[in-house]
Image 1 (cartoon, rainbow, N blue to C red):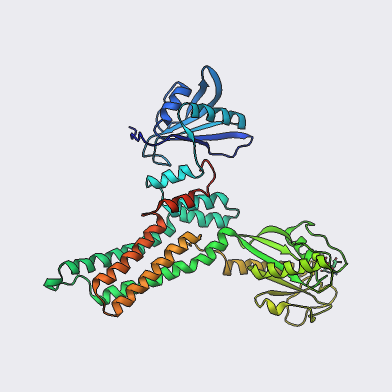
Image 2 (tube, helix red, strand yellow):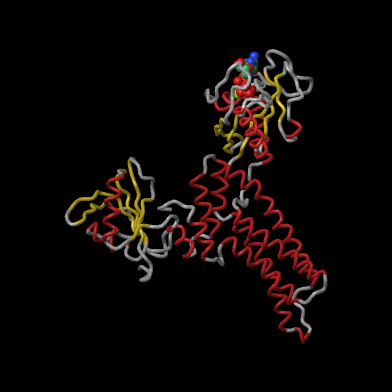
Length: 439
Ligand SMILES: Nc1nc2c(ncn2[C@@H]2O[C@H](COP(=O)(O)OP(=O)(O)OP(=O)(O)O)[C@@H](O)[C@H]2O)c(=O)[nH]1
Ligand SMILES: [Mg+2]
């Protein structure tokens, strides 16, 4: 059985990157997908059975492939859907797609498959967003967060708050209906307690955003210090290659040199910068300005001081109170008592530094499952939280049920907006335009 959706376009796109590989997948979604497969393959495979098919167009062979046909609503999108696993040549993929288009499909917009899945209630918005994040994830921790949200951890959290609010709303409304008889279906104290709980829970959700964002986008670390402190040497050691030029001449690095490595399960982009001093050299001055700017925006600042020189008037660590102070070249002179020191040349303190960074990233930035990961999600939670505060003020001020219900409804709608239970077209466009074609 297939569902008739005559108005829906049939769309097609490669689901795998256009390159050479063993296999390439083309997806066709919509009411004409099965008929198109029938025309190209001469057969209509049984639903959900991987079937070997020779694809032809006007007698010309396109490829032999494995086709799987899904019938609405039991597919990723919820529509009739066909997946063709072709040989992994961009030429074959293009020819098959051209044939499918000739038979009445159109090329899909970016994110259109996922958008259809959301429209058909197969995924909610948070889950759809987590597909994009999952595809873009570079570390296991990032993947874990996205998989959790795809599995509905965040959505369930939001929905459980919403359920509580709906519980309170329905009882307050029932009381309104029977106000003349003086019935009460929830005490004000009980309603208040539930609102207070919901406020605490939304606040906790809002607080996950900083970590959620850090985890999905990765962190920025900046190595700062005076010329010759050993910044470039440390960068090279951390990334494991001669990424930056190292010389004994102070003022070697001018531009920012950066490289991304994994620390504490997150991608951390480490930037090596120009040594801080006023040299009078135009190029160097620009480099120093860039170094300060980068450090101002960084999540982590490593401030390096040559142990044999100590801190001088030109040092600027006071401007970066959260910086990790590291004495360098301790093979030549010891770090001051109690201070942390390294030597790249003698391989001293490097393991400890890495362990410290690892702990810092895990303790301060790594997101637990169910964290908010983007601004859209945060906006919804903040809006909910504001409406709940208003509801609390109304209930504590002894205002009418009607007024409390308006605020609670606003809070519940904000949560529905988070998962896309109610959604405007604009939000959809914004979210799905960030996907690539075929997703
Ligand atoms: N003995 C010793 N020398 C080091 C160590 N680390 C760096 N050096 C030397 O210190 C000098 C400066 O190193 P760089 O890494 O270029 O210093 P920098 O802070 O990047 O300097 P600028 O780019 O000029 O700001 C080079 O000659 C390095 O070989 C170390 O741990 N021990
Ligand atoms: Mg340098």
